[in-house]
Amino acid sequence: MSRYGRIDGRIHSYLTFGKFFFKQKMYRTIILSVVLYGCETWSLPFREERRLRVFENRVLRRVFGPKRDREWRKLHNEELSDL
Image 1 (cartoon, helix red, strand yellow):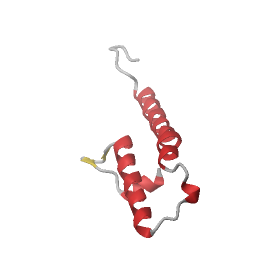
Image 2 (image 1 turned 180 degrees about the vertical axis):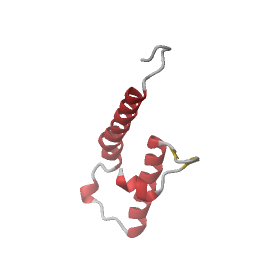
Image 3 (image 1 turned 60 degrees about the horizontal axis):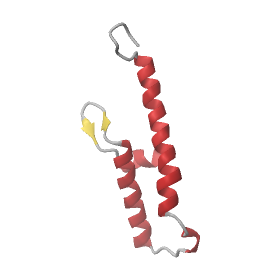
Image 4 (image 1 turned 30 degrees about the horizontal axis):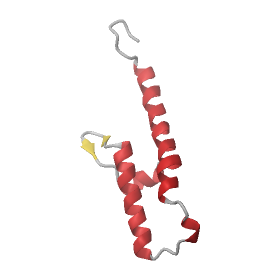
């Protein structure tokens, strides 16, 4: 912490980085396991597979929130697949 009670930039980046991995781990362990329970026996038509992708992108956007470049914006599908 700095002299005036502010968090140092390096500490802030570590906290943000840790929060990212925590969110990613929670998504993979809780949300995906519930959604995909019993998927070994599913036969997915293309339409259902697309609906699952749309759901996954919607959840990832909600979990990771918007991104700020010069202005706030939603994460694109390519960015979500890279997570």
